[in-house]
Figure 1 (cartoon, rainbow, N blue to C red):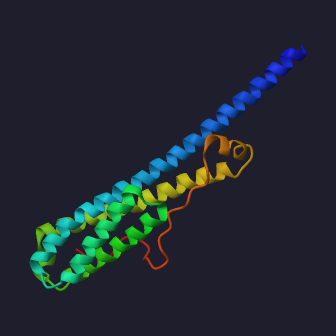
Figure 2: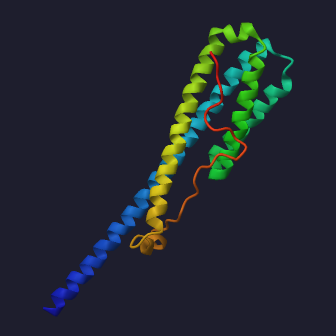
Figure 3: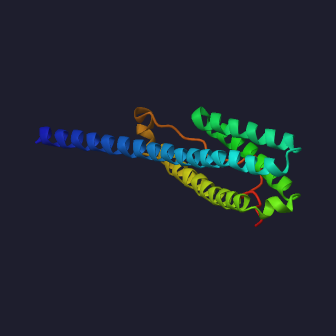
Length: 186
């Protein structure tokens, strides 16, 4: 009888360990996957930039500093998505946002450029990417919130160290970054 009770207790503890370990690891994988979604959208936006720069360059060749800033921002995004922290990704994202806004501001001075079908298509693609990026950021923060709640609450916090899971950093836009996508007029 005592042996049966001990066996049931050992089984229950083992089952709780397996459930806790798997729940924490699943939440961690979901957060990592969500961060990958941000990387995909940042890369997509960075990949649109050369086309935008080429289109604008044909009309505004003398705006060299703006176009160079875009290229530098694109390089920062590429580095951050390859191996950066969440903070580095947010900073690169902000740098690229500013560069895109500057290019679009230059475009405002060129009515022929604003009427170009290629430029209008790039603006539409950029706006779509900004919306998807905003969704990816929110999805990541939701996944991180779920993970962080598990990591700090009983009984899951008892398994966090064993599962190799820790709290993750939220995706925060730098304080000087505007909220929402850059303004794009058609």
